[in-house]
Length: 76
Ligand SMILES: [Zn+2]
Image 1 (spheres, rainbow, N blue to C red):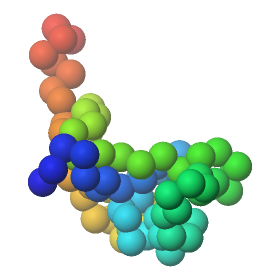
Image 2: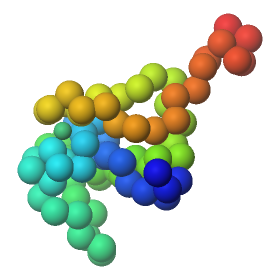
Image 3: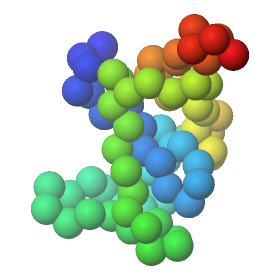
Image 4: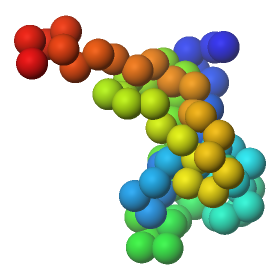
């Protein structure tokens, strides 16, 4: 897994795997940002991104393989 590899997308308040993001919002385009149904940008998620939980695709349930950080390490 490369750190800069796009492992999914976030849009409409959910995470999506690349295949489902393409099915919902169309193929990724190098210059035109895709927009979600609330007209916000569809953001790529990279393998090196750190989330406090492991996201799953809102359509197929696939796990988005990014870095999950343990919030307890900040003293909670
Ligand atoms: Zn999916």
